[in-house]
Structure formats: structure tokens, C-alpha cells
Image 1 (spheres, one colour):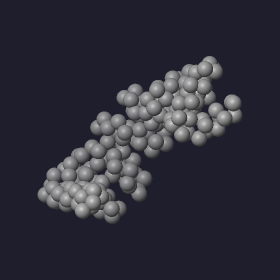
Image 2: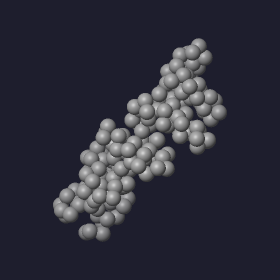
Image 3: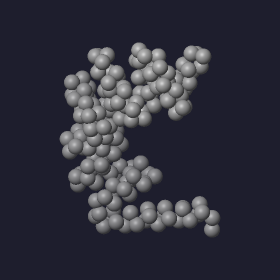
Image 4: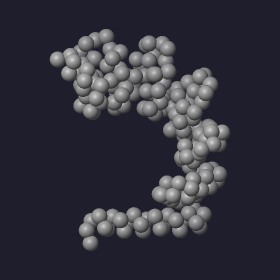
Length: 182
């Protein structure tokens, strides 16, 4: 048997174990088995069950799976209120109220969630605050933020440094801009 066959066998064995554990009531297994399900309705069923039983990561993932906007909003808010950092970001994106959106983005960004840093920078009206959040996201390795921060830099050396970093990470707009500077 080749390595791929052994990996397939391991995966199927793991999935069978997860299913058995989920069916016997193991809450983390319900969540992880749900994530493994290929059938979307089966996936939602297990994630919903785990979310209803208070498993916070399941609240986020079930919320992201929901077709009903109110149900989605409810579960994202629930996970965010429980302190789940990625949920704070996703809940912020679901908020229509600008102040509420900014509050949740700020919380997630201050807790180190890079996507929230970048999104918060894009929401900022204050140029200095925008640059600060773009720099933080860029320093954390967020490639689009590297490019956007470079475009905010007044120092040509710093601008070039961030463009080169974004280009090294195959960010096409940065590659093109560096080509135009030659």
C-alpha cells in the first residue's frame, strides 16, 4: 500500500472514531465530526447541536454556515460575547451599525487578530490611526496590509521595503508597482 492509501485509511479511521464519539455525546467530537462532514446538511446538523450545547467554536462555525441572517447574527454574537476572538471579527462584519462594527473590530484587533487589524484600518477616518493599524497588520505578516501600508508611507525607503515584502509574498499589485518604479 502506498503512503496515500495509508493516509486515506487513517483519515477514514479518524472520521469513524469521531462519528462514534459524537453519537455517544462527546461535545468536541460533535464539533470536529461536523467539520469533517462532506454533506452540508449533516455538517450543519452537528455544528448546530454542538453550538446549542454551548461549544463556542461551534457557535462561530455554525453561525458562518447559517443561511438565515438572524440566526447567523445570533450565533456570531453569542460566540463573540463568549470572548472567541475570530467570532468578534466575523460578528463585526455582520453588524450593520457602524459603531457596533467598530467596537467589535477594535476588540478583535487589540487581541491580535490580524484580519481585524486590517479591516479596522480600512474603516478608519483618521489617517494616523489607519497607518497604525495597517503597520500592525503588516508587521504580523498580513500581505494586503503590507501593500496598503507601503502606499501610506511618506519615507521612500520604508515604502520600498514594504512593497518588496508584499511582492516577495506574491502580492500582484506590489509586484506591478515595483516594476513601475524601475
